Each structure stands twice: as C-alpha cells, then as structure tokens.
Length: 112
Image (tube, helix red, strand yellow):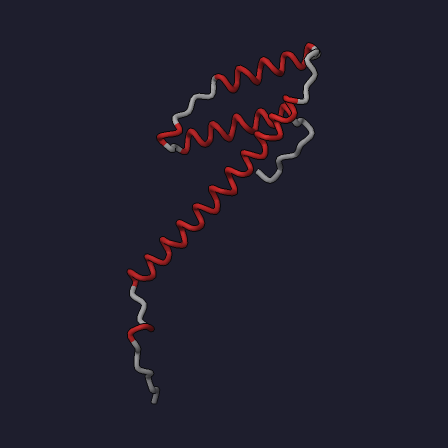
C-alpha cells in the first residue's frame, strides 16, 4: 500500500502559477535576445563608421562609387521606429549588413 504525503500549501503549483513563471521567463529571454541582437548591430555599425572615418579624402573611382552607393542606401532606409515593427528591424538589419559587407569585404558573417 502506498502512503501519500500530505500536500502542503506551498508545494501546490497551479497551472496559473506555472504560466506566470513561463511568461516571466519568456520576458527575460526576450530582453536578453534583444540586447544581444542590438549589440551585434551596433558593433557592425561602429566598425563600418570607423572604416569610413579612416578613408583618405582622395578616393579611387571604385571607392567613390561605393561611397555614393552607401549614401544612397542609407538615405533610402525608411523606418518608423515608434511603431516597433519586425519589418523595420529587418530593414535595419539588412542595411547594416550591406554596409558592413561593403566596408569589410573580407569579414565572414557565417554566424548570421
């Protein structure tokens, strides 16, 4: 015969309590993911800005073409940050990746 231990109040975990804990955990994961994602984009952007700042005023024809292309690319990037949409994040990610790939052609982005 099996003896059952009396269930104490603190040992009881309702489905609602479990759901609340999972939601709290999901919020923590979201914040950590957003921080890591933003940090990666910031690093790529900072590296690109440093590369552009290091360019000499006398650019080759190819470099001038790339500068114009990048300027147009950045100017045409239209987002509405106040809306907080995924499509705007995708646009920003795409533009930053493109700028970084042009300013750092030898950099491998296999971790994307």
